[in-house]
Image (cartoon, rainbow, N blue to C red; front, side, top):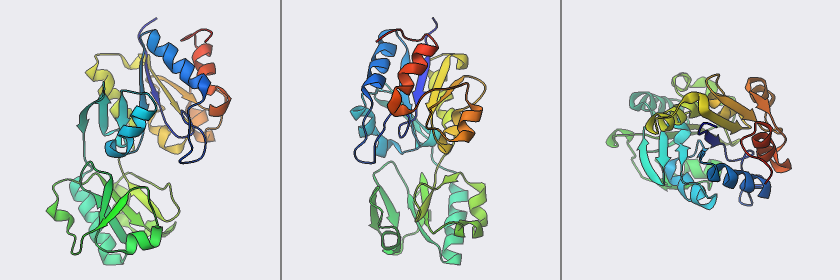
Length: 260
């Protein structure tokens, strides 16, 4: 069998449970171990920034990762690259937020904190996903790169922001949205190219909307049983729920591993 390149989304795919109390099912751990023993490459694929995901990667027992929504790649625990967002488009969005009274913040580097010009972001969101550092008179033009922008508002108020339409964004929380890279397939291809592999040997597992970008025809895509319908429609194969041995069963279905 050719060496395969496996990429797993985290929440709802690899890890189950509520935030802060997530775990990898024992069957998935056995499947991952068997895949590695047989010489396959395994990695996580997440929209989280490298700084926010690295410790999680280690806790999950991985050494390879697509992070930053496809713009960051890590191989053998070494960060190979992280690409920032389009700088001018981010400035345009922040300028429009200022003009229209939207609350904003941004991440200028690979760190576990965001910068905000005042207390409004935290007061509105009460978000503790990462630290919000207030810098009075904050000017994004004083920073050479922007990796994420955050806009605090309730849906569908973001429709008023014309510049947002030119950027990739998603909403995981009711109180605010993330502007962040949104094509995991870019990072997957970068890793496979780096390792001189073939795209046809890639296998991806996912369950949510932010996994749609990596469910493409160039490789095998597996939707968890708990996945959204839109993802299942694009999948090569639909397995069982994550907590019902979905990863193990898919690997056995395709013959990548035997009994474990």
